[in-house]
Amino acid sequence: MAVFTPIDKPTLESFLNNYDIGEIKSFEGILEGIDNTNFKILTSKNYYILTIFEKRVQEKDLPFFINLQNHLSKKKFLNPKPIKNKDGEYINKINNKPCVIMSFLKGNKTTKASTNHCNQVGKQLAIMHQHTNDFELSRKNSLQQKNWKNLFEKFKNDKKNSYQHIFESIESELVFLDQNWPKKLPFGVIHADVFQDNVFFINDVFSGIIDFYFACNDYFAYDLAICINAWCFEQNNVINNNKLSLLVEGYQNKKKLSAEEITTLPILLRGASIRILLTRLHDKIYHPQGAFVKPKDPMEFFRILEFHQKNKNLILKTI
Image (cartoon, rainbow, N blue to C red; front, top):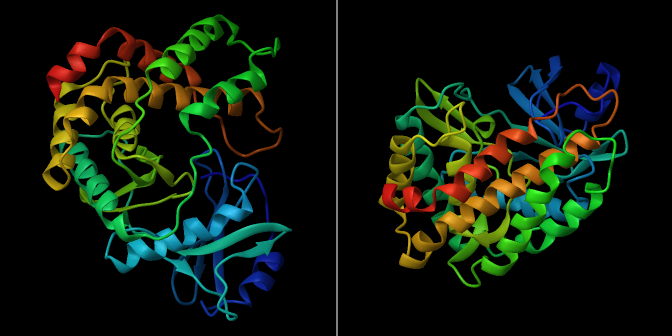
């Protein structure tokens, strides 16, 4: 979440007249995150979240995201629920940009993930994967493995950035992944962004997952790999084996991994590392002036990638 598109109170009041959610009392921008603009709104009825979609999210994909969150909400999964306006529409526009109003999810992100948090996250990720088995819509992953090279090509010749020293390593890794990426694994709707910013807890008990705007169809184990990278590494970019084993245990308590998923997990972890590395590099190099958000450090995931390159056997032994 972030703020790229400022709005004033009169504009917001006029917009909310189209909703039956009460009169606005206050609102504030949410400065965390990197992709969309978000405001927390308090009305006479409740708290809500206004999300304004920026360039990375395509308007044609919004029905998939909205329907997915409605589908999960109906299954009693803990996630924000889209709110209709008075015309029954979920997707609307403010300042000529597409936007949605979502219910407010109670809880807070954890600033220091414990093994207990990791176990709960693994369990809830598996539950989400199971709940989407009967979801009828699909969305191609716009950041799938085949697209990483194209993303890298956009900025690899940019001489003005300070990351040129890692570009040769990235190029080699992309070749490796292209040659070794698994061809067939259990496949379905994934979240693709279960980072600590997007998971809430109340008194250390899971209270929900937010930000489904990378959701797509891809390998379930790839979603697990993204989650492991986000939750199981310490500040020194070394994996915490207890967090890893308990996160995977939580997942497998609800959804068993196949032998092939386990065998290919080291490759998926490398791919999950480079996907985040590339998008962080892109956002850092092309960070818009005036945006009220600081891009995240790409080097964090370069070091995680290096760890996976050196520790395939450790990962397989731990899980």
